[in-house]
Image (cartoon, rainbow, N blue to C red; front, side, top):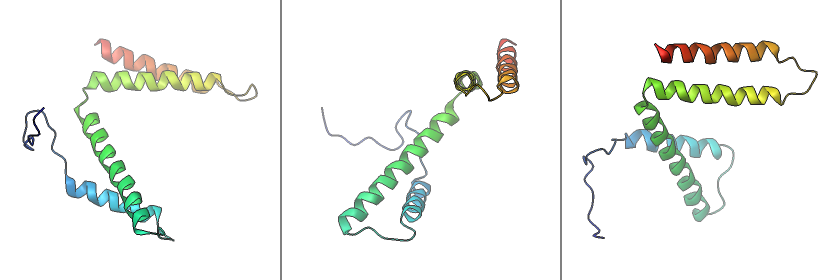
Length: 117
């Protein structure tokens, strides 16, 4: 496989605001080390590397979320609500679940009706 660079304007490659990503990475780094600093230069590099990786993952996730269609978002929301219903079933016996269950089921039904139209 040739080791040819891919141009930044290649077809299908999203463009990222690298300045915003670096700003977020520094913000995460400062948040993590507000009261103390890493012991050595190696620890600082490793810590900043982790923050930069996290900032890139956040940017890629936000880009993927922005590309989703309304139907995909509705399907994701139905999945979230279904998982929440399972969590409600796992509550202790003395906790009331009826109101929460009805609200979630109503929201799921409303989403399904809007998808059918």
